[in-house]
Image (cartoon, rainbow, N blue to C red; front, side, top):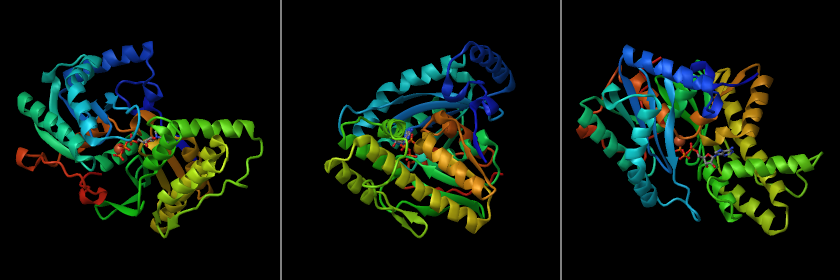
Length: 373
Ligand code: ATP
Ligand code: FE2
């Protein structure tokens, strides 16, 4: 079985998937804003691990509200951490006003400020931490630094209502298969070189496709399938790098580039690249389900926006009599709402003092004790 969890089910704003605006949404936002205010304070979440600055909110009951985000999209070349950090500094003030306006709130409605403490790009994380410290101090509310990877997991669990899944976390910088064991999210397998999304973005960039490359690769792969009734891997074979429970993508990137250089059609290579990269992730996820005995699979991270990887996870889980879940796309990509949600959950157990609020670029998924249910 497979489930794409709609935002409708667990969102304060009651939006359709991916934040489509409609009149029903407006009414519900108004309703929720009022009830949110009367019920108590909101938790603000600030996300700045890489290209995206995002402010999100959960209300006093931990109900998530779609974030206000701004992503730096370089015209050419990859991301430069300093440029991304400058972008975040430039737009932070406007974006904060925007998220408050969106839900008819004022700073006095914020009861706590959560931020991504790591992992991520140092200069970008530092901007988020500085903004969070500034806002928390000015508003006189608690501060809480959270683990970005764990936030991806918790928003997925909250949105999809799954209990104890194996997680396939596929983003730009991270590719991990994770399961909760003895109070930590344990990394059972991960990429040994680059993240799957970075691989897709680099391949796309080499073809002149701007960041983010993943969605365009998906589109080209679909175009290839539309014009090829019986697709075949003949002439499109790529290395398949599963090493035990770990993965690798740089060889795949080089080999896919070589196929294009040797004259293979770009859309066909995009199809093959997706099939090989996603199949390797799903294989490790399946082995993790077999080893742990867990029956739920949960996708997270920006690459989880891709319909093909969602379908592969559904098919694999169905074959094992399990169930696969994928959160709404706006909660797969980096967003402040997931940071607000994890902050809200953890605030029942701890806060972050200013002295302990430094960022940690290399924070690991399994460094954060899971003290909540
Ligand atoms: P993290 O810090 O968790 O590694 P990130 O900075 O990579 O996160 P995300 O928003 O989680 O940010 O993921 C962005 C990645 O998702 C990019 O590499 C982008 O190409 C990829 N992506 C987005 N949509 C799709 C899609 N439809 N198909 C494949 N990849 C996609
Ligand atoms: Fe992320």
